[in-house]
Image (cartoon, rainbow, N blue to C red):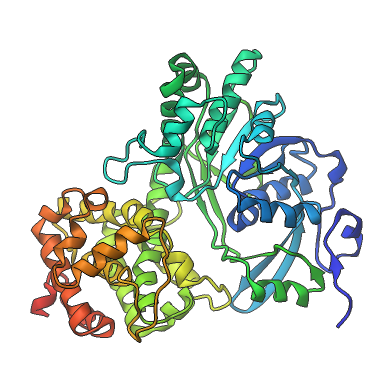
Length: 499
């Protein structure tokens, strides 16, 4: 094998794949991005790279940031290669790659977040963007309001000059900006949350109000928090992905594989300017809600339809789930009968057409997206993606048998064992609580629905609760394959016990 080319500014002219043609030494920062994972680098950073390739947005380079100790390892890897990233696009029939370079530094990971606060307070910073996962916004799962009682929030409220959270750091930076006579920055959430901009505003303003009501009023009045919808599947990086990068001739400690599909729909509400992302394929729209509803319900909820069943059956990837006739059948039936009826068309596509597109994307065998990754943090993903659909279906008198089965599959998975008896390792920040409820639900299924922080009053909805109880009993007594077979054979409104 030929010697691998180490990724760095010095080796850009030797790369075997396309790399930046712009002068990275001339880039200046305009964006601080908190949460530099694979999705950010395959999505938002890629759009910015495309602009830079056109000679645009040279003053919008990214400063990477993190607020958790584990972010330090990613920082070390990226700084060692001058914050360059190899993106490897995987179509079912082809592989292509490019190196992108819109990130120019990765801020130190500190307990006090001093470097992060200073960067956000700098006049050059006009956007602070985040990908911190759906569960990272301190939202009450039932009320969807701000969780002011969380210990980390309580700390930041009483110690605003020594924050622990990303949002506490944002509040401190905004306070410094106001004191210096600067305007605020735009807060741009790029996480899969319905109304993610409104949620980010709620978190930042509510946290500020706990310690400085005048500052909270200023932030609420002067700052902007545009909603956005983001879409591109970018699996976690492991030995397979690094080996694929090595096959291309590049030594990259943190390459990213991704599908070729990308979509970014953004509300055009930026208080301090923005890059012209629409020139490279992003869409600015006043109706982000319609786009994000379609994506979150069909894709993100669809992921949860697949992942728990796949985990129970020992199917390692989402593509494996789609290759299993019963799991794919579950996905298709729930989409057609219970998910797409709650989604409205958007310009250019219908819910049915979008579901067909998602089916193709999920079935791509080159995208090694593990069921474990997709099933992670179900307590946030089910409450955020699945249960709103369930409530809409109940309100409109539609079928909920399939969604009840999806919830029963999650409950069965959280018991911690697969159909073959192998153990499922903890896979949720609330795993201890979920596991206890799941084990209690084996003999008394309602114990699962009595988790009111997740389900609220859904346990009192017979159309859902009765179907859930029936499905969970079948899962424990007959197994996952039998339950999926019964569902496949059932009519739209037929309860599982009658199938």
